[in-house]
Length: 261
Image (cartoon, rainbow, N blue to C red; front, side):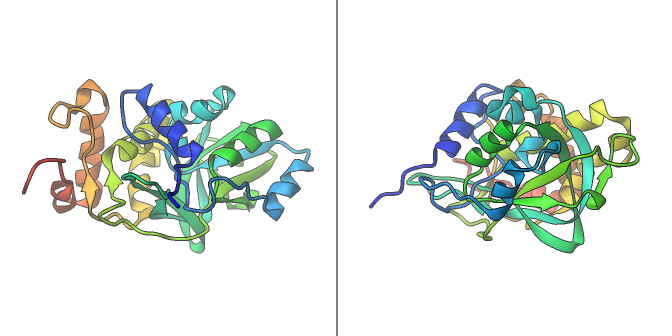
């Protein structure tokens, strides 16, 4: 029986078509049942929690446009660093066609991960949970959060992130794709433009250094790879970050479809 693509994945592709013609969008979704909704103990607990609810976005949810595709009111976000979470390239969607590997995250007390927090209502949290099917909604202790917007402590509330339930790494069939990297890193650059403290903390650089499993195959799927600024205004800054943080060898290993090296 053929597997059908998750509606969340279709939504990601449609969303990116409206913000520059990129091909892929999303925090990432694992291959667990697209047609079944998992209700974790944490998800049930948050329904009865009357405190303010916040989601920690560590991938495409760093970018405002990506957040607003799921819920238009979820645009305002604040940069943070979270202890006890490690982020890496090890999540994917099962599909009948080609697909990328997405960013995932799992608990690791020896690691830190940067991203943004944004407040949501219970209904909005449900919308994000529906979008990120296959992830485990996981609570973050407020004491593990360091604000990167100039505040000394996070706002009062309950904090969540979508944790990976398995790790499936980059492969030929599921490469890293530049369009998804562009969404994440352009979000980081926008955060630096808005918050001086995050720029001082080298927020965009930390995205690279606090992400594991950068590897090939990595496909440059920009619409105009030789003139990327047409659809990706921050392309030069993104490429400079890749070179500086991952090295020239990794940058040159990014392949162009149809070009033999």
